[in-house]
Length: 310
Image (cartoon, rainbow, N blue to C red):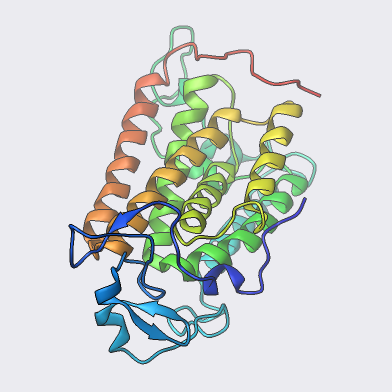
């Protein structure tokens, strides 16, 4: 696997869209140049040359700073949401071990049995007489893992991808992407295989990757040169090749990441409508929950799984 570089180049690349936009101050003027700071499209009359590229009038009045992964003051390296999420997942895995699981399998742990996602535990299903309406599973599944190898792969992925996205869009936007994608992953898992118990952060992680791809494209960064496209392709092939992997959770999270990433780039960054962007992400999460509950009692689009199944 060739993961994206973590040298800060994702954050400092020139902001230039391949699409033709209109100047945010002069809607009748088309342009392919965006402010190197806020990302809003600007026409020649609004361009102010700086050492880090063209800037809009508002940003040009601010003190010019080159942003790198080490120079972002709002997100100290030890106090990131990424680190907090990794810590929560690790603590949850240790709790699974402590409640009856092993490093090779946590399926028999009390925490796993009370937190894993399955359709018959969400809504009443004919033939099942146990407890239902356990809606917390739509969220809790994303913090549980089936084995040491499972959590190791996911946390390494988050450790690499999280520090690329979090400082690029801000902690609150990053949280919106993560949790909207996690809930969309539950919808995807139940849509395809509602009766298959599902755990893991993969849905949220695919959402992070999807948002990264959107942000990279809007800032003129090649997803192939950055390694994002290769990372996505490898993970999709891996998910289709090995049995026991929830394709629905991966795809649901990816779609939600693409959508929430687009909302943040277009509304929060370009139009400074941060509240609207966050509301859009919240709506996406609500629709995912509603969709998950709706399909939880169905037979699923692919009840027997999908992929090669090695």
